[in-house]
Structures are given as structure tokens and as C-alpha cells.
Length: 231
Image (cartoon, rainbow, N blue to C red; front, side, top):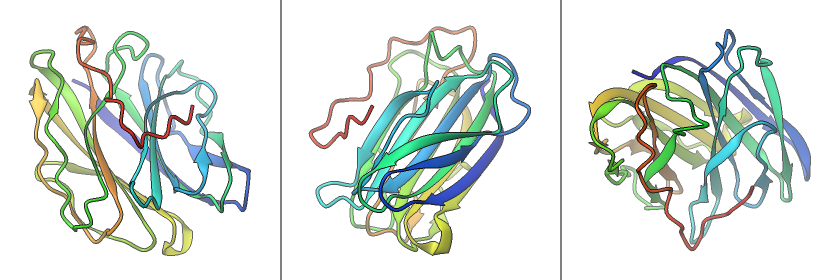
């Protein structure tokens, strides 16, 4: 079963265009999956780091204040402990969380998928939609992700989700990225509600499939009118 072995976090702030650093957990092993979650002010664009593949990219439209990104990479066992991505426009404050995951399927063959997306509800208890892989039961890792902005806090993750990581931009302003994870043998998962103070937020469910089981029959993250397509 895929398992979160470690998490590392970092925040950055750069006026205008700039290079922002993210952290990668140490002691990565060849074949492990690295997930990178990035939050940025919505008036800026955060690019995809070299060697990573983007699979989620959206904001809290219709009046966006925060943008969320997810990228994956297959580790070769010699990952540097830091990397960079480029931001353009606005005053791009950022926060990021890197996860090191063992026991996952080769992402080049059966990559993680983003499901159960919910955006900008204007309430403190967003409830992500049911994350249905449509690919039969398997021992999967389910990662619940939430992004907020400017001093907002977390009350509780969805029930049964461990506290994976929590990172907010320096000074309590700008992006806030929060993750919870659950190991569960299932085809689908309804994670239940978050408890957040956010007035502007977006949430998503990330599904990581186990090694040795090809489940790529699931649909890709659906096209949305406000999807940012920042590759």
C-alpha cells in the first residue's frame, strides 16, 4: 500500500517574477513517488519544476485569491533536497509541501490522479466530492488537500485523515496549504468535510495507486471553465 514516508515544507515571497524554492524530503529511494503541492496568490503564475509533471492546477474562481497546483515525479533515489519553480506576475507569495511516498505504482505508468474537486464555497466546512477511481478496489493512498489565503486557519481535517503537513506563507499572509492522508482499500472514497476558517479556498482529493496494480482506467481530472492550464 502506498505510504507517506516523510513531508517537507517551505514558504517564499518574491515581488514580480522570481525563482521560488521547494523542499524534497530526504532519503528518497529509487522508484518512490514524490508529490509536490504548491499554493500561490491567484494574480501570479507558478510554473512546473523541471522533471515534474503537473496534474492539478486551479483557483477559487469566480473571484480568485488563491491558486493550487499538484505535481508528481518518479524518484531516481538521488533527489536533491531542494528544487525551484518560477513565478510570474503580481506579488507571488507561495507555500509548498513535498511528500515522499513508498509502495506506489510507477507514476510514469499509473500516475496519481486528482478527483473530488471543490472550489470557493464561502463556508468554513468544505466537503470534497466523492473521489471515485472507477477502477475497482485496491489498497490506495488518499490525500486530502486544501488551499486558503491570508491568515486563515484549520480547525480539523476530514474524519479518519492523518495530519500530513500544514504550511502557511511567512507572516500569516498569502497561501496556506494543508494536507491529510488516509490508507484505504477501496475503489472510491467520500472524505467528509474539512473545518476551516477560510472564506476563499479550494480542496481536492489526490489518489495514489499501489505498485503492481494497473488502474489507469480512471478518467483524467475533468476540464473546467476556470482551469488555469499553466504548464
